[in-house]
Image (tube, rainbow, N blue to C red):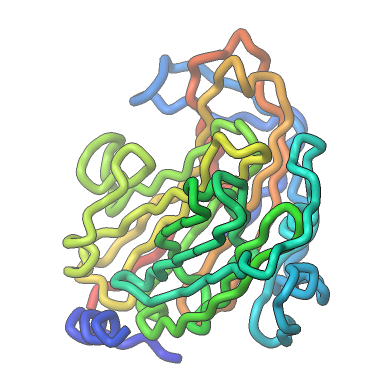
Length: 329
C-alpha cells in the first residue's frame, strides 16, 4: 500500500480506527557519548550478528501451544523469529506449577486500534492474578504481571495492519486478539528487545537534535503525540515489566514518515548503560524494523559488555541501525 502524502489523511486513518548490520570483530571500538559520559574509548568485543536476511517466521505450532486457541495460519498472518521461538516455551524453575484451568477461568483478550497506529490490549484472566504473562506480536515479545484479579491493559505499537496478539501464561494457557490498524502505513518503526538486565536503550535524535534537547527521543523523554500528529516528531514506547520472573523488555520508536512535514534524517542508536548488574556479562538482543513498504525485518545481536571498572559509562553502539531517511510532504 503506497503511503499517502498528507497529514490530514493520517489523521483520518487514525480516527477511523535495517537494520544495516555491521559485522563487528573483536576489538571493534564504540564511543562513549561525549554529552553523557567522560570522553574515552571503550572497546566491546565479540559483537556477533546471528540473524538471517529472510523474513521472519513463527514456529508452526507456536499458537497451538497456547491452550484453548484455535489453529491459525501463521505463515500467512503472523511472522515471528527464532528469538521468539526460544522464549515462548521457556519456563523458569521458579514459576508456579502447571495447573488445569477451572471452568470459570476463561481468559478474555481484546485488541482495539488507537491513534498513532497503536493497539490497546485488554486482558481478563480471573484465575491468573499477579502472574507473569508474555505478550507476542509479529516477533515482538514482552512480559508483564497481571493485577490481583488477573487484569492487564497495555498499548502496543502495531507491526502489521492485521495485528495479531498472543497473551501466554507460563502453563501455556492464554488467548489471541486481532485488530485492524489502517494508519500503520504512515509510520516507520524500529524496535529493540532484550532479556534480563541488559542496560540497553534505544535513542532517536531527530533532524540533528543534540542529546537531551527537543527531538531527542528515548525512554527518559518519550516524545509528544501532538508533534507526531503534526508530522514533525516521533515517539517511543517502552514495554515490559523488569520485575517479572523472566523479564523481556522492548522499546519501539515510531515516526510518521508518511506524513512528515520536514526532510532529513533521524539518527537511531543502541546504547548501553554499564552497571554492577550487567558489566562483564553477555547480552542477547534483537532489532525489528518496519520501513516504508518493506516487510518487517529482524536482526539478532550478541555482545560482551566491558568489565566492571567501566561502571557508569554509556556505550554508543555505532552503526547497528541505519538512520531513518525522511522525505517531507
